[in-house]
Image (cartoon, rainbow, N blue to C red; front, side, top):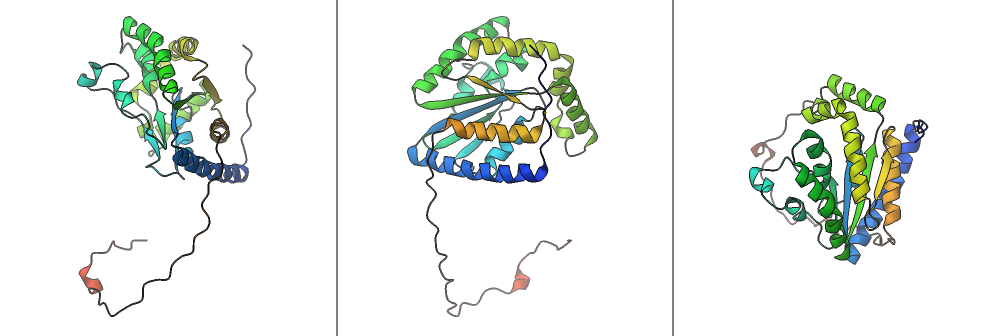
Length: 265
């Protein structure tokens, strides 16, 4: 496979304008999902520091969290490890009129669990065999599954890792598993390729996102997501703001009886 050409950065003003336009379309799409009772699952997987979190944030920041939910599960408990593997994810699947974004998903078994030895060879083989069946069953039940794999170059991932190390507010993003992903880059590549061979199915295909330029990746993902939902504009008509209730002599408590936040700024 030939080396992909390096994408150029996008101007901030162009990015901001296009993001605002796409987020407005996301609101329209959300209204359509609610009105028609659709059930949407969007899975975000990929290399560490490839930009999954930033894309999820831009998708959700203008949407109601009651309709568009983000699921990012911690490591399974002892009890969860004894359950059917997909069980802890099933409870988070959407009801009618909901969109669920999985920030990492059941594909942990094909990625970090496989590479780090957190599952057995038999468990991994069973996942690759049963995952396509599980997803086909969800699709037959009316759930639309959209799967994104965020790709990032070795050089760009290293730059982002170093930025996290040097930035106090980003250091929390760098976990021990992230560091292991650097030292096991090739093993993760093999695991991803094997996962794609088994789970890139017609009913729920994988879509690869070039994440080397974060802003471009965000716009591309949102644009693509919108293209997969055949929605119509159901924006409500503008409403008139009612007048404020007239004061009829009610006396409110004195202001000194309330605790105010100090005005430091």
